[in-house]
Amino acid sequence: MYVRSRMTPNPITITRQTTVAEALELMREKSIRRLPVLEKDKLVGIVTERDLIEISPSPATSLSVFEINYLLAKMKIGDVLPKKQKVITVEADALIEEAALLMRQHKIGGLPVVEKGKLVGIITETNIFDAFIDLLGVKDAGFRLAIATADKQGVLAEVAQIISNCGANISRVAVFWEEPQKALLVIRLTADDIDHITKTLTEHGYTIVSVLQNGSKEN
Image 1 (cartoon, rainbow, N blue to C red):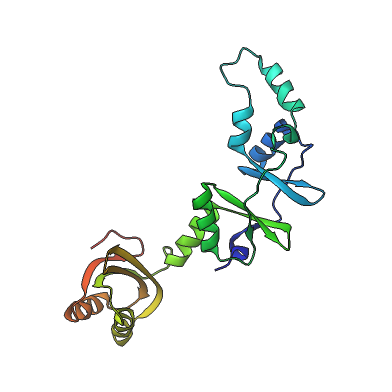
Image 2: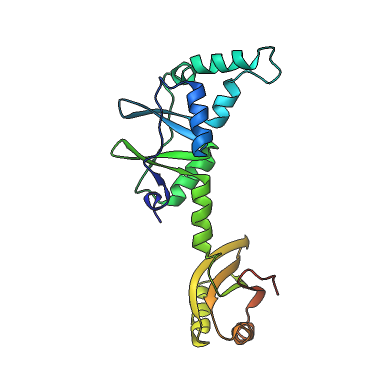
């Protein structure tokens, strides 16, 4: 899955000349938390709602509401944006896990997406969460089968063959390592007789950890 397929294209942007008050109002109006900053169509920075709130006068200030609004209306993004801000970006054709890793490494909640040096989108932690949900098939109809097994060659192929022989169709597969040499297979599938599948897997030495159907509680 690529960043291009999950990003928000044509993001709302501001310039160095945008005031802090305008930027905050834009964020509230559009329900967004970050704004890329462009200068002559070149990405020069990004500001978040948190950044702007931190530079705004404290609620404990002796300034009146009118004085605070006046200051924010005069203060420009260029006044608070570092002159040479290093903007962490990701390419549109990068894999989505690369974007997730960059966000994790730099402890940020979103990335401008570029293509040939031009801003084409923005991808956020919400986009990553949605992709994760889709990859695991959380919303898919059918069953979620969790199987504990030793981490050895051929396990996934054997489990898939057993399930296929039972007349079921696998739609999603995820592998998690609970501890060294032990894996948890999480399989989404559609089947008419899940009990037959779990019984057959058990007979082949696999441990069934849980079975869920359409968001029901674990068995």
